[in-house]
Length: 81
Image (tube, one colour):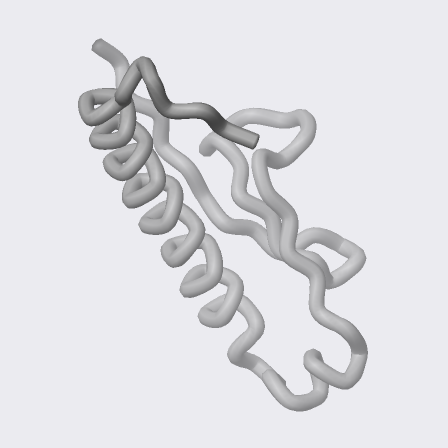
């Protein structure tokens, strides 16, 4: 199985984007900061964007685990409203 490599880049408009390495096209995720946040972050924008993307990936992995567990514990008599 082939694995994809990803990179975080800074776009010309100052946003940060997660994309597959070496590929053009629409990024998978973009993160933008307000002007006020940019002034506060100074040169740390890329580090903060990276931390935000890492947190998002961890959250998705956790949600996947929770969803799998819920499927295993599914009760046919449960009613969702």
